[in-house]
Image (cartoon, rainbow, N blue to C red):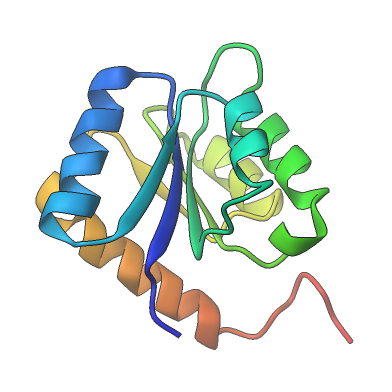
Length: 135
């Protein structure tokens, strides 16, 4: 199953522009960009991405709160979520992983390799055993 559709949630417009260039212009993905958690929840009503790239620190609804709301939607339970943050202390990174993220990317990031990095994360998640939903 190829990675084709990405939902990007980021309050900083300049980062949204860079991510759009990296993922659409360079890597050829279909990208829906949102400036916050509430907007991303409404987008998920009619757009089901293969992967969600989620900023950790946003006003109103932060990344962890957004992830909790995303997981309340049945069609979003198994969509891999990758956090992107400038706050990358190990305890915070672990908090994101414990909340259900499959990876954490540190800002600043390399725009030229972002698509390849997400592709690798996506395929690693597809092949890993699902430890969050044991049978």
